[in-house]
Length: 609
Ligand code: SF4
Image (cartoon, rainbow, N blue to C red):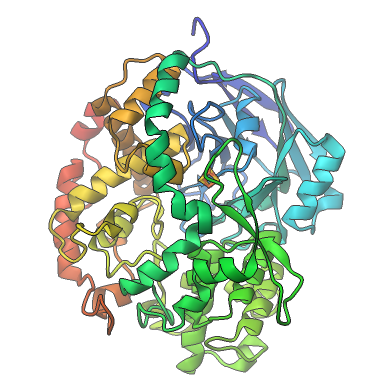
């Protein structure tokens, strides 16, 4: 490899927790330049190392933590990493990103990726330092919450290490379990896709990182000039985020008629103000929190000062969580959203999947498909006490919680022959709070997303701009392709979505090429960077095609395709099957995939794949 690559540790660490053996492989400059890091490295490694067709809980599945060239530099939002594997929820490629301090510390180990496979006999945690990996016993931590686990490992290993831990949900193989990290200034969660339960299946309670290696940057002067230039747009663009965090979105999106409510029967929530960022900030805000070296500080700590939940101090629920436990459940009790979020963090559950699964339950109860007897407690719209109890039961797989732990799609299949018609999910991943009906770019975006119902494959952000045509399918496949290239590049760099979108732009463009050039020393053009995005998307698609994904999997929730939004400012909007079909034809043609959604040899060859 010659001299050390700038922006990289230059090594991949493979750890087999069955035997405790580990090995190190170098990262070639070709791999780095073609895939950047993070998401790109994870896609390549998963395709190469995970055998096709295996169950997500098979010891041969891998959980990969990966950082990128931007991680631990001076770029705002640089402490970001991705964790990837075959998802037990979708059965497909999945990556989930997170911030806090862990990513920067992981970069300091000198490993750009850590690949964990196997299954330990007894609970362990994996400690990674510059010297490699070591397995340590974790039996005493099994059963503990994410926060207690992180605190115990900080006490055992020192305050400078960082810890990513699973909770009881991951241990009990809840298919949508999340993993979390805590540091004094900010907690960080990799929420989506259930990868925490893949760690749980390997009996890995936590991953601990410690290191001191510095990330060398090729041209610090050029990087500084770029950051100076973007300082003002970043500051202006993140003002609402800095003040309220993501809950600032509740009011404008409800005003647009695009805030899913009552399991998507509507997209306006009459009590949205009560659960808006402004209202919650006024009553519960205690302090701001931030990821390492980020000036935005979009995290907030809340304190409930009144009512029966008074005294609770916990992280603010994000916008997506407010949708999932609030409007989707017809629940306007703001304090209960904070408590639900806190419970999910502690127990290790994805808030979006949990809330959307409960929204299905509310509607199924109303239709008589599920009864109080099935659930073991009364539950319905707006019942936040029942909601909190069902969250606990899910993490413990206790009673009806055992069925909830399977996620909305599998639960619905077991409830009623037409159950899945009521489920807001794509590829079995429950959708977040950016409407698949009101935003036509999200319709094609969700249908073609590698992960399914994720708002981080195609981005909603550009679609909320005043001059964006949200209704027409015209130009939306082109938009989805471009947006997906951007998210793939962003997650490979790895950069926080908020600082990147608001500071450096919504698409792969010149500032990103300059950033990569300044860090790595490569003469990277925008066109070359755009091809990196396309390459990563194609690798992910190849993984999914190997698992059987074809055109018939690129669909939307039944309700999105058959029931127009009934009322409000976006009334009438939906995406009927024939419209989706037309967009898919165009999307596949743009991608150089065949009519069934399979990448063609020619396109793969053009991408050096
Ligand atoms: S904008 Fe928020 S999530 Fe992103 S790095 Fe800063 S504090 Fe972390």
